[in-house]
Image (cartoon, rainbow, N blue to C red; front, side, top):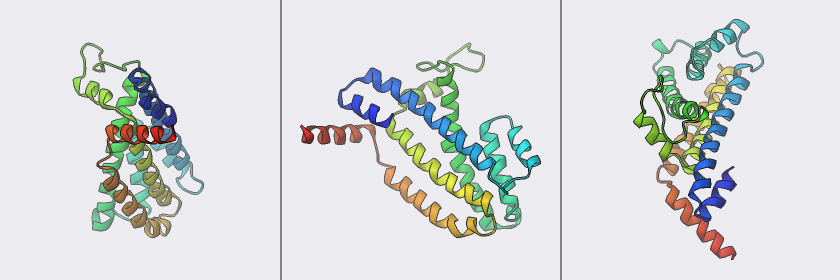
Length: 204
């Protein structure tokens, strides 16, 4: 999908770029949910009753938050542990930014609202979400994918090995993530197009 979008960016085919970009965002949400399910059913992770409780949450985002909290309970009480509380806060920030916000767009796109996003009653346009859909591009979604991998590294460690692996790997994964966010902060679609066309012209 990434290669397809790059191809159409070089060809200046905005129609195909728009279609492929929206499909790419749906692919991100599919991967996100698949990884969530994989982590949820990690052997020797959650008790069956905990899995059922997580699955009964109102939304996939709420399920992510509850999964995080139940896993952190196996580490300690974040209310009385400042370090653990800060880790929880940062991980919830990442869930809100890179799972909740893309999920909102996914719901609109999956229901055919590719150009104009509607409110829940389909009686008026939701201008904010419409703008977010129109601003979607391959660079933004590629950053989502990368951040999601780091988040899963951290939460998988937390579920698999709350007393050892989580502590051993947390800071390395978090530092790598923060470094990536800093590096990608200035990435733009315009810069990608320029780079792609330069490579294309060099091959020619």
